[in-house]
Amino acid sequence: MLISQGELKKLRKLYTLSHPARASIVKYLKRERKAYISQIARALGLSERLVSFHLSMLAGDGFVKSEYGLSNNPNPSRVVRYYELTKQVNEVLEQFVEEFK
Image 1 (cartoon, rainbow, N blue to C red):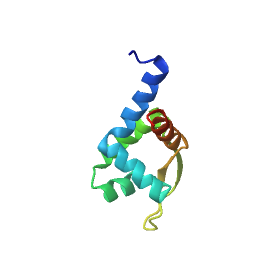
Image 2: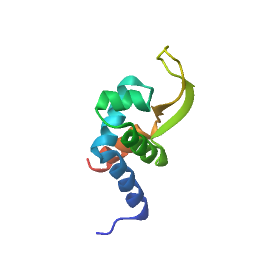
Image 3: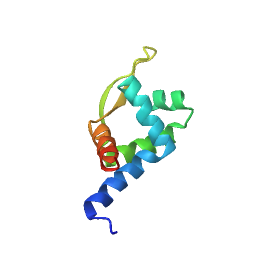
Image 4: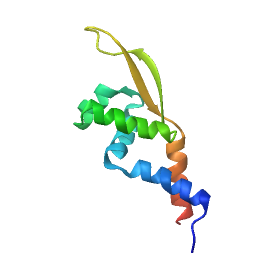
């Protein structure tokens, strides 16, 4: 049985979500709704560089979006890039579950 091009695209997106660090980032952002790299890194015990890499992978597949804002640390407040999940995360996971029922 061959896999169609559409199924291959879905599997690739699932592959992106399946990496332990990315899955942890998704889980964290589901709970926190919005966070910047150093917050995510501290919470997950990962380096900021690694979190940045995995966020770029998630963004590349449309799973996260970002916007600039002020950090919630008042001493000193600085401009940071906040990340949040898109609806696509749930859509891809729901499609996967539905197809394998």
